[in-house]
Length: 396
Figure 1 (cartoon, helix red, strand yellow):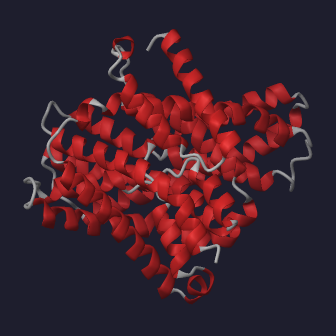
Figure 2 (cartoon, one colour):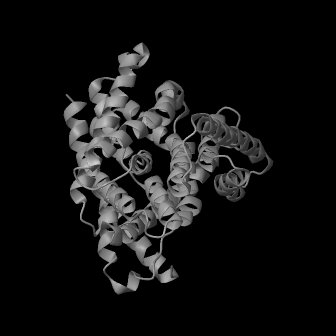
Protein backbone atom coordinates (compact mmCIF):
# COMPACT_ATOMS: atom_id res chain seq x y z
CA UNK A 1 0.00 0.00 0.00
CA UNK A 2 1.46 3.39 -1.05
CA UNK A 3 2.01 6.16 1.49
CA UNK A 4 -0.14 8.51 -0.63
CA UNK A 5 -3.00 6.00 -0.48
CA UNK A 6 -2.70 5.80 3.31
CA UNK A 7 -2.80 9.62 3.59
CA UNK A 8 -5.91 9.82 1.38
CA UNK A 9 -7.69 7.12 3.35
CA UNK A 10 -6.81 8.83 6.62
CA UNK A 11 -8.13 12.14 5.27
CA UNK A 12 -11.43 10.51 4.31
CA UNK A 13 -11.63 8.88 7.74
CA UNK A 14 -10.95 12.12 9.60
CA UNK A 15 -13.68 13.87 7.60
CA UNK A 16 -16.18 11.16 8.55
CA UNK A 17 -15.15 11.25 12.22
CA UNK A 18 -15.44 15.06 12.18
CA UNK A 19 -19.02 14.72 10.93
CA UNK A 20 -19.66 12.19 13.69
CA UNK A 21 -18.26 14.57 16.31
CA UNK A 22 -20.48 17.42 15.09
CA UNK A 23 -23.66 15.47 14.38
CA UNK A 24 -23.48 12.69 17.01
CA UNK A 25 -24.99 9.20 16.66
CA UNK A 26 -23.42 8.91 13.21
CA UNK A 27 -22.88 5.31 11.97
CA UNK A 28 -19.16 5.73 11.26
CA UNK A 29 -18.24 2.07 10.51
CA UNK A 30 -21.10 1.66 8.05
CA UNK A 31 -20.28 4.89 6.20
CA UNK A 32 -16.57 4.07 5.99
CA UNK A 33 -17.19 0.56 4.66
CA UNK A 34 -19.60 1.82 2.00
CA UNK A 35 -17.10 4.51 0.96
CA UNK A 36 -14.43 1.78 0.80
CA UNK A 37 -16.61 -0.26 -1.55
CA UNK A 38 -16.99 2.83 -3.74
CA UNK A 39 -13.22 3.42 -3.72
CA UNK A 40 -12.65 -0.13 -4.97
CA UNK A 41 -13.98 0.96 -8.38
CA UNK A 42 -11.34 3.70 -8.69
CA UNK A 43 -8.19 2.41 -10.47
CA UNK A 44 -5.88 4.34 -8.11
CA UNK A 45 -6.84 1.99 -5.27
CA UNK A 46 -6.44 -1.25 -7.29
CA UNK A 47 -3.00 -1.95 -5.85
CA UNK A 48 -4.27 -2.06 -2.26
CA UNK A 49 -4.21 -5.55 -0.82
CA UNK A 50 -5.48 -6.26 2.69
CA UNK A 51 -4.20 -9.36 4.45
CA UNK A 52 -5.26 -11.10 7.62
CA UNK A 53 -1.78 -10.53 9.04
CA UNK A 54 -2.11 -6.78 8.47
CA UNK A 55 -5.38 -6.62 10.41
CA UNK A 56 -4.19 -8.99 13.14
CA UNK A 57 -0.75 -7.56 13.84
CA UNK A 58 -1.14 -3.87 12.95
CA UNK A 59 -4.74 -2.86 13.62
CA UNK A 60 -6.03 -5.17 16.36
CA UNK A 61 -3.42 -4.63 19.13
CA UNK A 62 -3.89 -0.86 19.16
CA UNK A 63 -7.69 -1.07 19.14
CA UNK A 64 -7.78 -3.75 21.84
CA UNK A 65 -5.34 -1.95 24.13
CA UNK A 66 -7.17 1.38 23.82
CA UNK A 67 -10.54 -0.17 24.63
CA UNK A 68 -9.09 -2.18 27.52
CA UNK A 69 -7.18 0.54 29.37
CA UNK A 70 -10.09 2.97 28.96
CA UNK A 71 -12.63 0.41 30.18
CA UNK A 72 -13.82 1.48 33.65
CA UNK A 73 -12.61 -0.95 36.36
CA UNK A 74 -15.86 -0.54 38.30
CA UNK A 75 -17.83 -1.50 35.19
CA UNK A 76 -15.77 -4.65 34.70
CA UNK A 77 -16.10 -5.71 38.36
CA UNK A 78 -19.84 -5.11 38.30
CA UNK A 79 -20.48 -6.99 35.04
CA UNK A 80 -17.60 -9.49 35.04
CA UNK A 81 -19.89 -12.53 35.31
CA UNK A 82 -22.10 -11.81 32.30
CA UNK A 83 -19.15 -10.49 30.26
CA UNK A 84 -17.04 -13.62 30.79
CA UNK A 85 -20.01 -15.94 30.24
CA UNK A 86 -21.02 -14.34 26.95
CA UNK A 87 -17.40 -14.19 25.73
CA UNK A 88 -16.75 -17.90 26.40
CA UNK A 89 -19.73 -20.22 26.93
CA UNK A 90 -22.07 -17.86 25.10
CA UNK A 91 -19.92 -17.71 21.98
CA UNK A 92 -19.51 -21.51 21.90
CA UNK A 93 -23.28 -21.97 22.14
CA UNK A 94 -23.76 -19.38 19.41
CA UNK A 95 -21.38 -21.16 17.04
CA UNK A 96 -23.13 -24.50 17.62
CA UNK A 97 -26.70 -23.21 17.26
CA UNK A 98 -25.98 -20.81 14.40
CA UNK A 99 -23.96 -23.41 12.52
CA UNK A 100 -26.77 -25.96 12.89
CA UNK A 101 -29.36 -23.42 11.71
CA UNK A 102 -27.25 -22.42 8.69
CA UNK A 103 -26.77 -26.07 7.76
CA UNK A 104 -30.48 -26.85 8.13
CA UNK A 105 -31.50 -23.98 5.83
CA UNK A 106 -28.61 -24.13 3.37
CA UNK A 107 -30.38 -26.74 1.24
CA UNK A 108 -32.94 -24.11 0.27
CA UNK A 109 -30.23 -21.91 -1.26
CA UNK A 110 -26.86 -23.63 -1.79
CA UNK A 111 -25.14 -26.79 -0.66
CA UNK A 112 -23.04 -26.40 2.50
CA UNK A 113 -21.57 -29.12 4.66
CA UNK A 114 -22.06 -29.03 8.41
CA UNK A 115 -18.43 -28.08 9.05
CA UNK A 116 -18.67 -25.24 6.50
CA UNK A 117 -21.80 -23.98 8.26
CA UNK A 118 -20.02 -24.06 11.62
CA UNK A 119 -17.08 -22.18 10.10
CA UNK A 120 -19.36 -19.38 8.88
CA UNK A 121 -20.89 -19.24 12.37
CA UNK A 122 -17.42 -19.02 13.96
CA UNK A 123 -16.47 -16.17 11.64
CA UNK A 124 -19.61 -14.20 12.49
CA UNK A 125 -19.70 -14.64 16.27
CA UNK A 126 -17.00 -12.15 17.40
CA UNK A 127 -18.48 -8.71 18.01
CA UNK A 128 -16.95 -5.34 17.21
CA UNK A 129 -19.18 -2.52 18.47
CA UNK A 130 -16.68 0.23 17.55
CA UNK A 131 -18.47 3.59 17.77
CA UNK A 132 -21.81 1.93 18.56
CA UNK A 133 -20.95 2.03 22.28
CA UNK A 134 -20.94 5.82 22.30
CA UNK A 135 -24.26 5.82 20.41
CA UNK A 136 -25.80 3.56 23.09
CA UNK A 137 -24.62 5.88 25.86
CA UNK A 138 -25.99 8.97 24.14
CA UNK A 139 -29.27 7.41 23.00
CA UNK A 140 -30.22 5.52 26.15
CA UNK A 141 -28.01 6.90 28.89
CA UNK A 142 -27.48 3.30 30.03
CA UNK A 143 -23.84 2.74 31.02
CA UNK A 144 -24.47 -0.91 31.97
CA UNK A 145 -25.45 -1.98 28.44
CA UNK A 146 -22.45 -0.19 26.95
CA UNK A 147 -20.11 -1.84 29.47
CA UNK A 148 -21.45 -5.35 28.78
CA UNK A 149 -21.26 -4.85 24.99
CA UNK A 150 -17.74 -3.44 25.07
CA UNK A 151 -16.44 -5.89 27.68
CA UNK A 152 -17.78 -8.91 25.80
CA UNK A 153 -16.31 -7.62 22.54
CA UNK A 154 -12.81 -7.26 24.03
CA UNK A 155 -12.68 -10.81 25.37
CA UNK A 156 -14.65 -12.87 22.85
CA UNK A 157 -12.07 -12.28 20.10
CA UNK A 158 -9.71 -14.73 21.80
CA UNK A 159 -12.43 -17.39 22.03
CA UNK A 160 -13.35 -16.87 18.37
CA UNK A 161 -9.82 -17.48 17.13
CA UNK A 162 -9.53 -20.82 18.96
CA UNK A 163 -12.92 -22.00 17.66
CA UNK A 164 -12.15 -20.83 14.12
CA UNK A 165 -8.69 -22.44 14.07
CA UNK A 166 -10.12 -25.79 15.15
CA UNK A 167 -12.92 -25.74 12.57
CA UNK A 168 -10.67 -24.48 9.75
CA UNK A 169 -8.17 -27.30 10.34
CA UNK A 170 -11.05 -29.79 10.24
CA UNK A 171 -12.30 -28.43 6.93
CA UNK A 172 -8.97 -27.92 5.15
CA UNK A 173 -7.04 -30.83 6.67
CA UNK A 174 -9.80 -33.36 7.08
CA UNK A 175 -9.22 -33.62 10.81
CA UNK A 176 -12.05 -34.95 12.95
CA UNK A 177 -13.42 -32.99 15.89
CA UNK A 178 -12.05 -34.03 19.25
CA UNK A 179 -13.82 -32.36 22.20
CA UNK A 180 -11.04 -33.08 24.70
CA UNK A 181 -8.38 -31.73 22.34
CA UNK A 182 -10.45 -28.63 21.56
CA UNK A 183 -11.14 -27.70 25.18
CA UNK A 184 -7.57 -28.48 26.17
CA UNK A 185 -6.22 -26.15 23.51
CA UNK A 186 -8.84 -23.53 24.36
CA UNK A 187 -7.87 -23.50 28.03
CA UNK A 188 -4.14 -23.46 27.27
CA UNK A 189 -4.36 -20.62 24.74
CA UNK A 190 -6.88 -18.57 26.73
CA UNK A 191 -5.47 -18.97 30.24
CA UNK A 192 -1.93 -18.50 28.92
CA UNK A 193 -2.92 -15.25 27.21
CA UNK A 194 -4.74 -13.98 30.32
CA UNK A 195 -1.82 -14.84 32.62
CA UNK A 196 0.74 -13.13 30.38
CA UNK A 197 -1.53 -10.10 29.94
CA UNK A 198 -1.94 -9.70 33.70
CA UNK A 199 1.84 -9.96 34.11
CA UNK A 200 2.52 -7.40 31.36
CA UNK A 201 0.00 -4.95 32.81
CA UNK A 202 1.32 -5.31 36.35
CA UNK A 203 4.95 -4.92 35.29
CA UNK A 204 4.07 -1.85 33.25
CA UNK A 205 2.36 -0.26 36.25
CA UNK A 206 5.59 -0.70 38.23
CA UNK A 207 8.01 0.40 35.50
CA UNK A 208 6.06 3.66 35.06
CA UNK A 209 7.52 4.87 38.38
CA UNK A 210 11.04 4.83 36.92
CA UNK A 211 10.37 7.72 34.55
CA UNK A 212 8.38 10.89 34.93
CA UNK A 213 8.64 11.67 31.24
CA UNK A 214 5.22 11.26 29.63
CA UNK A 215 6.78 10.63 26.20
CA UNK A 216 8.60 7.56 27.51
CA UNK A 217 5.47 6.39 29.31
CA UNK A 218 3.52 6.49 26.05
CA UNK A 219 6.34 4.62 24.33
CA UNK A 220 6.05 1.99 27.06
CA UNK A 221 2.33 1.60 26.36
CA UNK A 222 3.11 0.96 22.68
CA UNK A 223 5.57 -1.76 23.68
CA UNK A 224 2.96 -3.35 25.97
CA UNK A 225 0.21 -3.21 23.33
CA UNK A 226 2.20 -4.51 20.35
CA UNK A 227 5.14 -6.25 21.99
CA UNK A 228 2.95 -8.14 24.45
CA UNK A 229 0.59 -9.15 21.66
CA UNK A 230 3.27 -10.52 19.35
CA UNK A 231 5.34 -12.15 22.12
CA UNK A 232 2.29 -13.99 23.42
CA UNK A 233 1.35 -15.14 19.91
CA UNK A 234 4.92 -16.36 19.40
CA UNK A 235 4.71 -18.42 22.60
CA UNK A 236 1.45 -19.97 21.38
CA UNK A 237 -1.07 -18.29 23.67
CA UNK A 238 -3.72 -15.69 22.82
CA UNK A 239 -2.19 -12.32 21.99
CA UNK A 240 -5.68 -10.84 21.88
CA UNK A 241 -6.40 -11.77 25.50
CA UNK A 242 -2.88 -10.77 26.59
CA UNK A 243 -3.33 -7.25 25.20
CA UNK A 244 -6.84 -6.92 26.61
CA UNK A 245 -5.89 -8.02 30.12
CA UNK A 246 -2.70 -5.93 30.10
CA UNK A 247 -4.88 -2.89 29.42
CA UNK A 248 -7.46 -3.90 32.04
CA UNK A 249 -4.81 -4.46 34.73
CA UNK A 250 -3.19 -1.13 33.85
CA UNK A 251 -6.59 0.53 34.26
CA UNK A 252 -7.05 -1.18 37.66
CA UNK A 253 -3.58 -0.17 38.82
CA UNK A 254 -4.07 3.42 37.72
CA UNK A 255 -5.40 5.35 40.69
CA UNK A 256 -4.46 2.54 43.07
CA UNK A 257 -0.69 2.38 42.82
CA UNK A 258 0.21 4.60 39.85
CA UNK A 259 0.87 8.07 41.25
CA UNK A 260 1.87 9.73 38.00
CA UNK A 261 -1.07 12.13 37.68
CA UNK A 262 -0.31 13.00 34.08
CA UNK A 263 -0.08 9.33 33.00
CA UNK A 264 -3.75 8.94 31.96
CA UNK A 265 -3.69 12.28 30.11
CA UNK A 266 -0.53 11.25 28.26
CA UNK A 267 -2.05 7.91 27.22
CA UNK A 268 -5.31 9.52 26.14
CA UNK A 269 -3.50 12.20 24.17
CA UNK A 270 -1.73 9.55 22.10
CA UNK A 271 -4.18 6.64 21.83
CA UNK A 272 -7.23 8.85 21.18
CA UNK A 273 -5.48 9.93 17.98
CA UNK A 274 -4.32 6.43 17.10
CA UNK A 275 -7.76 4.83 17.58
CA UNK A 276 -9.74 6.85 14.97
CA UNK A 277 -6.77 6.60 12.61
CA UNK A 278 -6.78 2.81 12.84
CA UNK A 279 -10.57 2.64 12.57
CA UNK A 280 -10.53 4.90 9.52
CA UNK A 281 -8.03 2.73 7.68
CA UNK A 282 -9.57 -0.52 8.88
CA UNK A 283 -13.17 0.04 7.78
CA UNK A 284 -12.19 1.70 4.50
CA UNK A 285 -9.89 -1.24 3.73
CA UNK A 286 -12.65 -3.71 4.66
CA UNK A 287 -14.86 -2.06 2.05
CA UNK A 288 -12.13 -2.08 -0.60
CA UNK A 289 -11.18 -5.71 0.06
CA UNK A 290 -14.72 -7.06 0.26
CA UNK A 291 -15.98 -5.54 -3.00
CA UNK A 292 -14.96 -8.44 -5.27
CA UNK A 293 -16.33 -11.07 -2.90
CA UNK A 294 -19.73 -9.37 -2.80
CA UNK A 295 -20.40 -10.18 -6.46
CA UNK A 296 -22.15 -13.52 -5.97
CA UNK A 297 -25.65 -14.94 -6.31
CA UNK A 298 -26.57 -15.95 -2.77
CA UNK A 299 -27.38 -12.60 -1.18
CA UNK A 300 -30.75 -13.92 -0.05
CA UNK A 301 -29.02 -16.59 2.02
CA UNK A 302 -26.61 -13.95 3.43
CA UNK A 303 -29.62 -12.00 4.74
CA UNK A 304 -31.00 -15.21 6.26
CA UNK A 305 -27.65 -15.90 7.96
CA UNK A 306 -27.57 -12.37 9.34
CA UNK A 307 -31.13 -12.70 10.70
CA UNK A 308 -30.28 -16.07 12.26
CA UNK A 309 -27.19 -14.62 13.96
CA UNK A 310 -29.31 -11.88 15.57
CA UNK A 311 -32.08 -14.22 16.69
CA UNK A 312 -29.75 -16.84 18.17
CA UNK A 313 -27.65 -14.19 19.92
CA UNK A 314 -30.81 -12.74 21.47
CA UNK A 315 -32.01 -16.20 22.58
CA UNK A 316 -28.67 -17.00 24.24
CA UNK A 317 -28.34 -13.62 25.97
CA UNK A 318 -31.96 -13.60 27.16
CA UNK A 319 -31.84 -17.25 28.22
CA UNK A 320 -28.59 -16.88 30.15
CA UNK A 321 -29.74 -13.73 31.95
CA UNK A 322 -32.97 -15.49 32.99
CA UNK A 323 -31.21 -18.59 34.32
CA UNK A 324 -29.12 -16.72 36.88
CA UNK A 325 -31.18 -14.74 39.45
CA UNK A 326 -28.63 -11.94 39.83
CA UNK A 327 -28.50 -11.28 36.11
CA UNK A 328 -32.28 -11.59 35.84
CA UNK A 329 -32.69 -8.76 38.31
CA UNK A 330 -30.18 -6.50 36.59
CA UNK A 331 -30.79 -7.14 32.87
CA UNK A 332 -34.29 -6.97 31.40
CA UNK A 333 -35.38 -8.45 28.07
CA UNK A 334 -35.22 -4.94 26.59
CA UNK A 335 -31.61 -4.56 27.65
CA UNK A 336 -30.87 -8.07 26.35
CA UNK A 337 -32.26 -7.03 22.98
CA UNK A 338 -30.04 -3.92 22.86
CA UNK A 339 -26.99 -5.99 23.85
CA UNK A 340 -27.85 -8.50 21.11
CA UNK A 341 -28.38 -5.81 18.47
CA UNK A 342 -25.17 -3.98 19.41
CA UNK A 343 -22.96 -6.98 18.59
CA UNK A 344 -21.87 -5.78 15.15
CA UNK A 345 -19.48 -7.83 13.05
CA UNK A 346 -16.21 -6.13 12.20
CA UNK A 347 -12.44 -6.36 12.34
CA UNK A 348 -12.08 -9.83 13.89
CA UNK A 349 -14.61 -11.35 11.48
CA UNK A 350 -12.74 -9.83 8.54
CA UNK A 351 -9.42 -11.14 9.88
CA UNK A 352 -10.89 -14.65 10.06
CA UNK A 353 -12.32 -14.32 6.53
CA UNK A 354 -8.95 -13.22 5.14
CA UNK A 355 -7.20 -16.01 7.03
CA UNK A 356 -9.52 -18.51 5.37
CA UNK A 357 -8.89 -16.84 2.01
CA UNK A 358 -5.11 -17.23 2.40
CA UNK A 359 -5.46 -20.92 3.32
CA UNK A 360 -7.58 -21.86 0.30
CA UNK A 361 -7.23 -21.61 -3.45
CA UNK A 362 -10.84 -21.10 -4.43
CA UNK A 363 -12.26 -23.92 -2.34
CA UNK A 364 -13.92 -21.63 0.17
CA UNK A 365 -15.13 -18.85 -2.13
CA UNK A 366 -18.79 -19.25 -1.16
CA UNK A 367 -18.01 -19.24 2.56
CA UNK A 368 -15.91 -16.08 2.10
CA UNK A 369 -18.61 -14.32 0.05
CA UNK A 370 -21.41 -15.25 2.45
CA UNK A 371 -19.35 -14.13 5.43
CA UNK A 372 -18.32 -10.82 3.84
CA UNK A 373 -21.94 -10.14 2.86
CA UNK A 374 -23.23 -10.94 6.38
CA UNK A 375 -20.58 -8.62 7.89
CA UNK A 376 -21.61 -5.81 5.54
CA UNK A 377 -25.32 -6.31 6.29
CA UNK A 378 -24.52 -6.29 10.01
CA UNK A 379 -22.59 -3.02 9.76
CA UNK A 380 -25.36 -1.30 7.80
CA UNK A 381 -28.51 -2.61 9.51
CA UNK A 382 -27.26 -2.72 13.10
CA UNK A 383 -25.45 0.63 12.91
CA UNK A 384 -28.61 2.34 11.67
CA UNK A 385 -30.85 0.56 14.18
CA UNK A 386 -28.90 1.10 17.42
CA UNK A 387 -30.03 4.67 18.11
CA UNK A 388 -33.81 4.29 17.47
CA UNK A 389 -33.91 0.91 19.20
CA UNK A 390 -32.09 2.23 22.28
CA UNK A 391 -34.37 5.25 22.51
CA UNK A 392 -37.55 3.21 22.10
CA UNK A 393 -36.73 0.32 24.45
CA UNK A 394 -34.70 2.00 27.19
CA UNK A 395 -35.92 5.59 27.29
CA UNK A 396 -39.54 5.09 28.19
